[in-house]
Image (tube, rainbow, N blue to C red; front, side):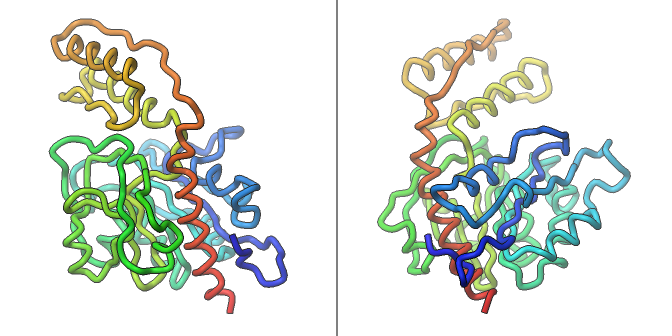
Length: 301
């Protein structure tokens, strides 16, 4: 990619605001930071020091939807920001602490180009364009194929496609609602579904997860099975589509039938080939490089 900084220097560029993990010393870097931090792909976009965590745990403080002053000041030093997703707290987006937090972030960022991921994308679309979030009949989970649509520079970075990308979500924003609000679909999957979209103000909205590692969907599935077995959710999770090797998928289907029948189950130890993630992380890095380079060259002028 073209270095967005005239003179070739590595100034602070993109920051990652992680809403998924707790601020524990020595924790692994977020998926987004790891995706941006590959030296061969994005040497000047982000560094580990340019990552911050906002803890949305309601027991962590009296106001989990607030933006800490130190984080607000840090945002002011950036040329671009990525805001991760978070696990939804309920069906009403406006009552989710993420929604309040995204509103405060938007108040702070002004013209700063921002990428919003998953739940953060749904919240930002509601704040910026009054686009409603819709509950899906079942969780959309798996590695989906996307068509590159539109003629934007971001689309040309991904052309000709198709682009593979993991999804893991209970909600969506319908594509026709994006169209009505003047938001441009970039990656489309299905008749009224999408993976990435952007507006004319430099915001990139991503429903998919190009930042995921090879085993992330599997870990989420195992987590949800555990919740079902403990009675925390009423429906057994659906298997990720277009993801698991055939023998592993068949074994998990058999165990799912037993679990639905009330039989005790123990999931086998499964691992995924790390190279699997290359199918979506490569296009994901091209998407980020196009977004960051194009928007930050404009911001630097």
